[in-house]
Image (cartoon, rainbow, N blue to C red; front, top):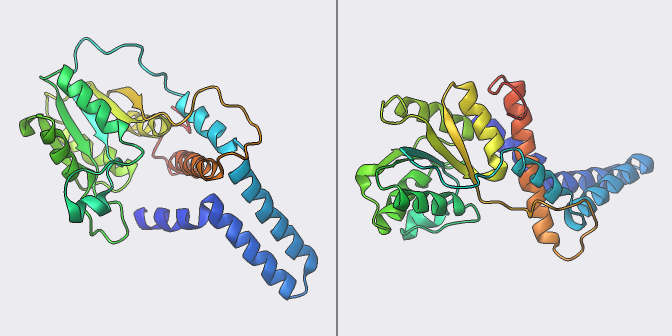
Length: 261
């Protein structure tokens, strides 16, 4: 499942689809099938235009972020937190050490804030090496250096370093959550990723309190043309498309009870 999902996404991401459509169009034109060629080329241009020059991706991502409300205030007490990986540049940290964070850094920044505020809480970090090669350390390994660097005792940390997908995060974490001291944990992950993560935990019968962070949209985006930031538009579209595909795939394979929780 892991390998097939990785290979599928290489092909299914928006810019790859646009390239494949353009390639198919050129092949059809070369084979003197002009009508089919023009259709493929038109589809490629349309996909590129929507991806680069509209806010479609941002609106789709915003829909996911709005699914689970952001907490208004901190809880009175926090006994444990589950932090899903994906926030460290593990290809870099494997060779250079330290803790280089990417766009999802808020997952660990928020966990650190809560860990400092609630010194009795424990932190379960779930995240292994999700690369094809399997040659890099996972987030769970880098997270130990991160939290220790800010004075969080290693005795509070629980590492789950085998997971490569969100589904594996849940399966592998569930074994560790058998500890009686780990009940009703906060689930910390990116807001757009929270619907799929929460649906998986609920399907597994694990009681968690969603704690979304790492918002990528303002919450007030509307569908419009946007020629000012094509690279960001492409990134937002790819992120949204990947997450919506993941939601649908998990539902169709019976891993979640509904597309959205």
